[in-house]
Image (cartoon, rainbow, N blue to C red; front, side, top):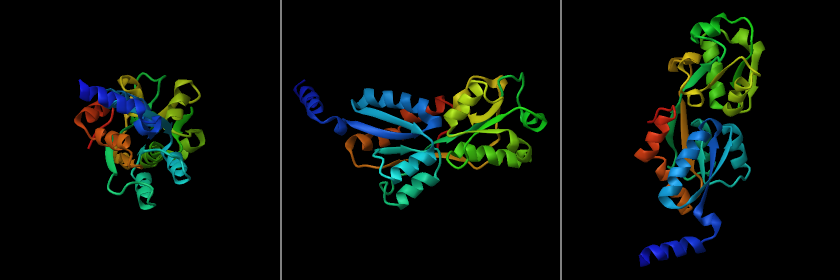
Length: 238
């Protein structure tokens, strides 16, 4: 009891920044990250502050001085770039999830490959391929199916995959190439894009500070409990 009381005292006297971990997280993973953060907070007592946004924008902001402790990206390239720039702790980069792309068409009774091949009208939402790995995967898919030239005129580009989902959800686009994790549980309205149609969506995390809270959160992401939660929300894990 005395040891526990001492621990509580130490936590209460530390400045907020010392017991807080700031995490820049890819938009597609934000909901899952919230659940992981809650679990981590219950286990450790540390507070997790999540900053959602496109992977490309986060990387640019970090390069320009944004102070975060952990970066949970939606690709490999940006964490690697930060590591090469000396902005991330060398050797801390790892794949925490593998994303899956899906075609979501709410008005259709059955969605499949032919949905992309046969539609002559309507608007298709994708994430900005310059900022979001899911957007790049969407363009690769359309080109692999040889339908990009048609859809190019009807594309609605979201800044990130969260905005892409909202375009479809609000009816501003008829369909969208979104993250499977966003639409899990609607099998009749989606077509899971075959992985061979686009580059793998490997989502990597990297440690940006040596704070104890950050180190513990980074380690937690590799725990079996965290991996189980990630799989439960529509992702594959390494």
